[in-house]
Length: 268
Image 1 (cartoon, rainbow, N blue to C red):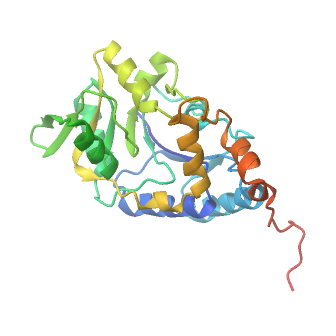
Image 2 (tube, rainbow, N blue to C red):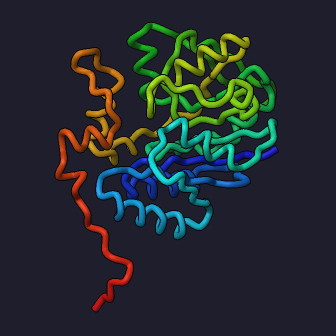
């Protein structure tokens, strides 16, 4: 059995750095590997890509894999996992660049749930966003616990956002990958909920571990705009193109930005 930590670096390099150090500071499981996938974030592309390489090298506990271009969120995760020849009993931690949990032991508690409960295929931290969804939709957790461990977890009846999570590789190997409704990102929760219910499985949340969402402020506001227009806006106002195409359309000066210092530069 292996546990893989996985981060898709479709982000400003500074956001990746914060994510990696928050993870190292608060994790209690030593993953067999930590894979960072180069996401080819389009703003100041050349410099950002080099900064990401330098951050991963300085971090010293992760390996950088590069598919050569932005291939999408779920696609990048599954592409990286398939490079590793994992056994069906493996798990992976999805460590998004905007994610963190400062409640130490969240990763170990998640492993206890997956080890104990074969019907749980993803276990996530709670988050302020989850709490808001529950309030807005008047939904409550269906609670379960692992005896003698003090670990309590809960399911929800409807698809609800999740972020920082531990995933059961065998289930997603069985269904052929990570379901994603958008072309490049989005609504993974709905796909996971659908496939889980088909097989009498479920996604759950750790009740005693709350995700810190402050890393979201390190995103560029243009990414938030694009996500709203791409997956949360109806026709005819929806923007169907990818993020790079949106930047080219609305903010061409950002796409043209290039502060990359040439490799052969001599500093004086």
